[in-house]
Image (cartoon, rainbow, N blue to C red):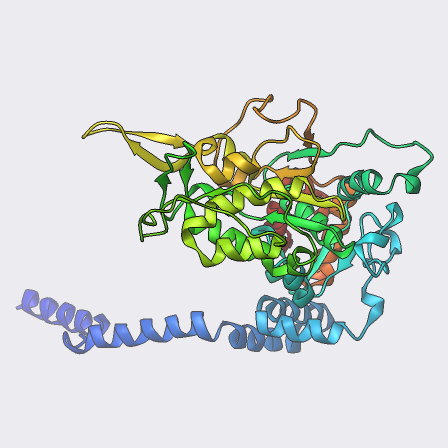
Length: 461
C-alpha cells in the first residue's frame, strides 16, 4: 500500500516537470520559419539592426558609445558603392580634402603629361576618361581599368620612373632641350621588365598618351598576346611564315583610329609587290598571288587596302612596318605591351604526322616576325607582362640589344604613402583606422605591389 502511494506521487511530480510535447508535424515548419527569419535579418537587415542596436547602446552608454555608433554608420555607408559614389560627388566640392602626405597637394596642377616635372612626382595626374579612350582607342591596360573602377576616379600616380622614360625619348627628338648633357644615356630601344603589377603597362600607356599629345605617329599594341592566340592561321608558301589574317585586320583598324590624319599626309615609299595569302575562311584568290600599290598612294591607302581585303591584311601589316622605318617628317614610336609573349610558343600547332603536332613559335608568325626585332634605329618600347604566365625568359633575348632591358620598380615608400592617401581621399578606407603605422603595414605586407596594396587598403581596421 505504501509503495503504491509513493509511485503515484513520483509520477505526478514527473508529469509536472516534463515539457509539453510539440506537434511532430508543426515542429519542422516552425523551425524553418525561425531559420528563414534569421537568414533574412543577417543578409538584408544587417545595417538597420546594427543601427538600432547602436541607438540602444547610445542611450545607455552616453558619449563613449556615441563615437562608436558614428564610426559604424560611416563604415557601413562607405561599404556601399552607391553611398560611396554619392559621398565622393559631395567631396569634389571640397578642395580641402585633396591633401597628400605632409600637407602637400594630392593632385598636380600640371595641365598635360608634357608639363609634368620632377616636383610633380608622388602626386596624382587627373585624366578625362573620354579623352583617354579617344587618345588610346586600341584599349586601356587591364590594371588601369581596374584602378579606375575601384577608386571611382580616372587619375594616375606620377612616378619618377615614368618621367625618366618620357625624358629619354624627349632627349632623342629634342636634344637642345637637354643641352646641359646631364642625365643617363639615351636609348632608342627599351624593354620594360620588373615584378608583376609594378606599373609597366600603365607607364607604357601614359608614354603613348604623351607622344600622341606631342603629335607623334605611334603604333600601339596593348595586347601583344592576342597576336599569337585565336583566329585562323595558314602557312604562306611565298614567305615561309604563318599568316593570321584576323589579327592583322584588327591591328590595322586599331592603328588607323587615331593616326588617320597623319597617314593621309605620308606617302608610300615602297612599291614592291605585296604577297597575298589566304583570306580568313575564304581560301586563296584564283590566279593572283601579289598586289602593288598605285603611284602616289599614301599610308592611309595602304592600311585601308589591308582592312578591305582579307587576303592582303598580313602582307600590308608587314609592309607597314617597313614604311614606318622610312618616315622622317614626324617622330615615330612603336609601343608593344605583353612583349614577352613574342619570345615563346604561340597557341597554334602544326601537324607533323597523323597523330602528332608540334607547337609554332611566335617568331614564325609573319606579323610577330615583322615587329619583334629591336635591331634597328627606330624608337621602340616593349613591356613585359608577367600576368600572362609566359614564364621567366633568359636575360639576353634574340633580336634585342643587350642594354635594352630596364627594370621597372615597385612603389617606393614615398610613392606608397601618396597612394594610400589617395585611397583615403577616395573613401576606400575608413579615416578612423588610417594612420602612418597602418599604411606602412600595408606597404611592407605587399612589398610595394600596386594591386596587392589596393586589395589590402580597405581591410584597415
